[in-house]
Length: 265
Image (cartoon, rainbow, N blue to C red):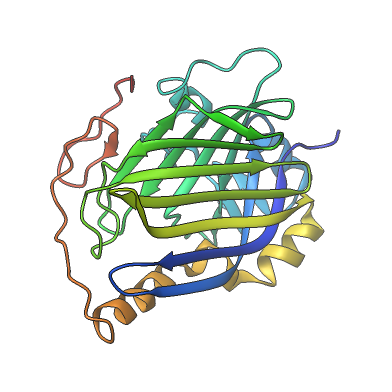
């Protein structure tokens, strides 16, 4: 059976525009997993495990509420339950040798070539997790959708809590682009995106794109984050904003408080 899930090879880019320009681009390897295919992928690819250790593994409890229940069941507390003819794609990087840090994951609800809804799941380096449910999407081209929402979660210590996120999703059979730009008072202050070319998942493809290029995956996210933070703090002297205590009900994991599992409206 042909899988909808893909492995993507491309790049991740950050462009800070103010108060001091700073930009970087890294090669990136990531996956788009159809949540209904996780066990099938584990059976067909000998080095991938679902809820079990393997060279690459994806655990349900690493996402959303952090609960030991299927990701799709956790997502049903956030989006409307998946209907017949719909699929849910998880854009992420799995664990490599048991380790991963994903600054952002995307949960995409699709029907055919249409994007029906999305959830941006953001993890910061302080141990917190927040979601931005994007239930109202504007289709601006045959394969492109946009959405906006106020910033409500502390991510980078070099940004305060003000601003609005502008999301862009471009989906087609062979390529994937997801952009998140931060605006303040009508001015774009930060542009970020990830894009890649999609290939069918197989053991050979995982070895070629993910294992050979191990340091282009989430396995290397934290060292890259620390290096870029050092560039912003020392040579460019950007102001540091301390982590505020999360106040939003969409912050699913707060390192200082018990986890919640209530629906997000």
